[in-house]
Amino acid sequence: MAGCSLQWYMSGVEELKQQAGIAACDFVKDGMKLGLGTGSTIRYTVLELGRRMKHEGLKIVGVPTSESTRELAESLDIPLIPLAEAGVLDLVIDGADEFDPDYNLIKGGGGALTREKIVAQSSNGMIVVADDSKQVDTLGSFDLPIEVLPFEWKRTADRVAEFCSGPVVRRGGKKPFISDNGGYILDCSFGSTITNPSKLESALLDIAGVVEVGLFVGICDAIVMASNTGVLTLVKHDGRLV
Ligand code: 5RP
Image (cartoon, rainbow, N blue to C red; front, side, top):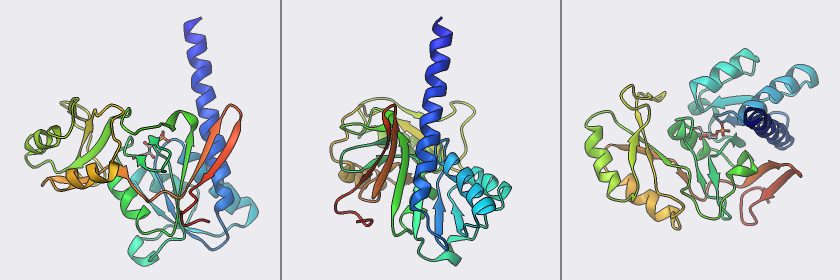
């Protein structure tokens, strides 16, 4: 019985991811230069973009935020260009691990936070696709991912731990997860205490060895959120999409 209900829950969440991922494509216009995020929700966005290109003649070019998204986009014949060539992007669509009422995010569950932030900061707008389990009052229940250099990473982790009341753990343990950039990911257990994400981001970025922090502050402009009652698009009132 327990196995059955868990399976139902998982397929329910998967369906919500698909709904959010597809609904976000309504923001995409012909000719756009688009940042393509990483994760299991945005995967549905990329699949839908590929479908619209093939069957509806949509024309876009993409900049992927990870090697996995690059492979997916290439398999769908979505043309890709380097960011340096694209210049400023019209839009980036990406997933998130958490979002708060101010549209601040925790990202990096897939380990792609550094490329995701580079692409997001190079875009004229950011749309997040998510199911409603990602919505929180205060960030931090999801362990904050931080990309660090492998060089003396334990020292970097100790310095990060000075800011974090819970454990700071290298992702993958003894067989560490290696990011697309060759970095390690520290997962930092703050609990839902991150009331000033901007201040925390700055403090963590000051630590030598920290490559990037999975806090996205003031970058996200809209959230396409799917729940059991439907898909809701939340648009930041002072964001770039109004
Ligand atoms: C990858 C990310 C993802 O966007 C985030 O982890 C959400 O992923 P998913 O849609 O699979 O829940 O930040 O680095």
